[in-house]
View 1 (cartoon, rainbow, N blue to C red):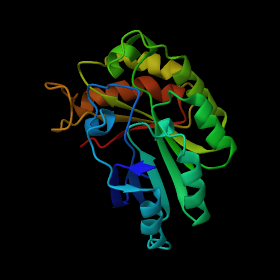
View 2 (cartoon, helix red, strand yellow):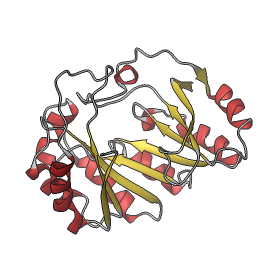
View 3 (cartoon, helix red, strand yellow):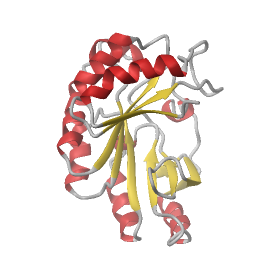
View 4 (cartoon, rainbow, N blue to C red):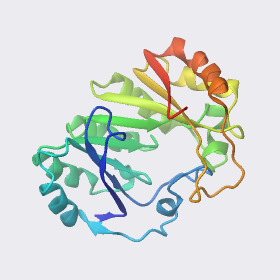
Length: 230
């Protein structure tokens, strides 16, 4: 398996753990606000393969608690499960970031006991999902299936939404709240512009505005808060 990026240590990506973050290329969504667009469109060259990753992790046993897989969309990789098994045998915990569009693969990995934490993006309400991910007419059935799988599982998980003025309003969060009703954790993240974002001119809401959106969702979930908002 080709690895397209590696953050050797993070205290942020895997809640409560010291981890490294592994970036995998390829994605089946085309979000105009994506921070890792070079991974989505395949421009980023591979920096190592799984054997090199395992050698790196062999030198981090006892120093890192876990490994976070992100992308791109990691569940597009057919060999991801095999690589995770080898990493777990070394004693590391595993976190998965996913867009939720592959419920069968998500369930298979959960059933096999390969995951310790899952963070799933919920991009918008069903009505605006396609617009928000750059795929007009997108069918959210798989997204809703993945939400249900996580809510019914015993694993620790979170749902999260990155928010922009151009794609989100109060009705967005009314729709999201209904989609994730009964969830354990939900985070609203403010959009931060970077050179790697493919669409110019996107803008963030203020902290006060984001808090208003948060109040819409709070009655529907056990725990909700803003993340990365000053």
